[in-house]
Length: 302
Length: 287
Image (cartoon, rainbow over all chains, first blue to last red; front, side, top):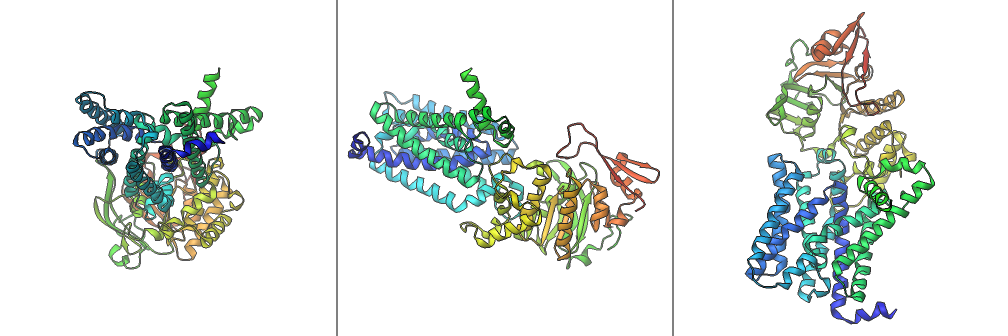
């Protein structure tokens, strides 16, 4: 019990706890749509695109969040516009913008002499180092994302499942697409402090991927994803505090562990499949993420 | 309504304009550089039960997308329910080809049918008791009320189309636009779905559906629109579906054996069909 309560006496730990809970929830909620659309790499691309924004903000002495937000939202919208206006496939547009923007970040970063701790923490994240001012920005943006999804979840769901049917019934699918990309960008910026550029894609997709192995109802899937996101953020934070290791990596490892548990023990997991051959037929009902994950795990244990 | 096959543009669109639920005037449209439809003039009266027929690539789906406001015409004018296409979207239910949807998606039958209610709810408002009643009633009509909590990926091809039609019914639209609603399903389901569409038409709703199934178009629809890049014929189904008109709509894909018309039409969108399998649609040309 003391192990759990002691860290709460430190204000830096409390701040980190609030931040990771919110990041876990926002990422899981937005990540549900990312996974269902099969656009996981958009998350990775936008995260890397935030890097040059951070470097420029650092050079200009602005808050790093501001630079990251501008760069991430700008790239997200650029992906949407390039895909629609040029007819280039989305994965190609993502690949080009992802590498190009990150290269710009490295280019600028390599021009800064000496060791820059702030930038390093954005690459790998350190939620325990979050300051009171950053926390206010993070809570504001994180809550804004969750509120927007709470108001528009129906429209986002319809537009994701059946874009033609949704558009024909008067739902503004194109505007929702841009809004969705903006939400992904803001969520990623909010998460950078906690898990960093490299690992943020895991925060987005792993909770939703895990939930997908456990339920086939959309609303329940989002709630399960949020529960996975929040609990792994809290558990990961404690573990990183006790062991004095990197917080972002620990949170992602906890999420990955939950995903593997769902693959093995879930209702349609490996063990359930071995017991009843019939449930193997149900494979077709599940999205690629789950099935691929299951096959991957088989390969790993063989 | 005039039989248009001798004069493809012969429908007096200007006159019909005021009463038509669907009105197209000299419309041309396509994708990129490719022309899909040209010089389409058409007026569909309220209460019509209209089948859009034609070979693959004839522009059937394009016709529906134009009516749904999903595709803007290059030239010409379109009015739907008395307004430019897309303006009265909440009074229109469009159902895409079942193959275009990812059925592995984690939604239940109830979730999908509830989507039909979303447009009238608008953002922010959550589905209430009225909406659940409408969903329940629509699912009862299509005979799927016992599958409320089933994930849609577990349904058969026929059941998926029942669910999609239930979504359209739950939306309580004035205009149904259905892309291949009865393709590749068992005869019982086909009869059921057609009974429901006929009932909607009787209540004054307008139903426009594309189909590959000429037998169904002849037997169950009231009007037929034969297209092949433009309007080949438009009128009551018994007049339009004669061998002469079909020959013009289907070109080389038509076989006439002993006065019975057999349309050979490769590679359509049958759900249950194995790749490469060939289908026949038989139709009595003397009907």
